[in-house]
Length: 263
Ligand SMILES: [Zn+2]
Image (cartoon, rainbow, N blue to C red; front, side):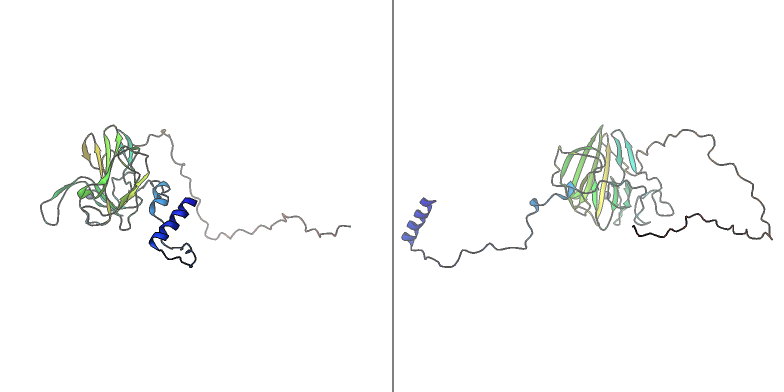
């Protein structure tokens, strides 16, 4: 320390630096937000996947929607896809409607194009979840897919997620994810005209229809012999029947007791 002070004094002697009498400047407080890496990653505490009991079409004129019921519901929808790797979320979003289904669809310019997945849309975005346990294969930007994630669930089953606004920066090839874990947020990166998730499901290297493939087996329940009560005969109403007399209420509470001042 002393050596530094001496060398500084020597430098000033050589260069003739002016000695200032102004006090040392105080540290300046700032309102600028700290860098992002100092904040907790939102994916560490984000909610897990909801299991959507129904899926509704965004509008009746979407392409390849399949069977749509009177309330706008996709009638073949079930909450999960039964696969060799176990159940996958059929709608791995926080909230979304069905804007396009799987298969060949007409385009406005004519022609037509194969659509390799389903489009699950929401103007407001929202989280996208891992459809099941697995390992990240790709978490990167991929041309038309935009921000893209592919997960290997084992047994030849993979899922792909496209057009994300962002994905969890901790996800890289080989990282393990668990079912329902948030992996990114819905967006419109790549070749997309609106905010949606492009969701693909692959089984043994083949793209399957995420909306209709792997309908779960029906529940097995214990057979019951009688599921309803025997019908009871209804007594006919008497037209002149007087309303029942109100029964006098008997006293059901104790007499009040005057509080006495202790002696
Ligand atoms: Zn799509």
